[in-house]
Length: 122
Image (cartoon, rainbow, N blue to C red; front, side, top):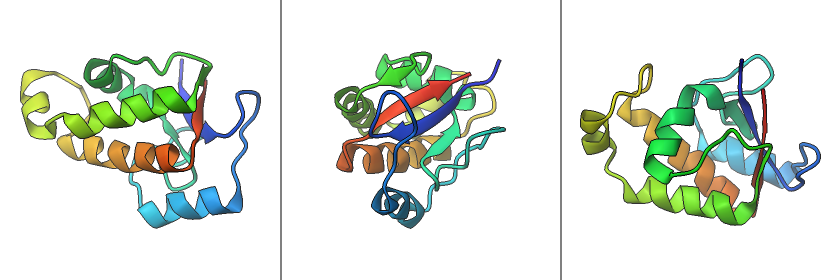
């Protein structure tokens, strides 16, 4: 089962403005894309690749249909507070590298600054 993660203003459908999309492109995010999701620069990524790492670092699960903006800001704060290299030495996040945390920080920063929540499907 896959898990695609999409930034959105709405809990019901993917809703992004042109300015939101521009902010994601400007952030130059490099995350793994899925069948339906992109690589971060379009406001989406393949959540399944990062779900365990995000849960371990932030205590939050991407396996929720809707993650509201306030929780997205908490996830961003936790990603910013972690030490990517130290956390990788202490955990086994198969298929991930320390740079992934830096890229997730970029994605969640844009979401936080633009008051976006996350829609997850899979």
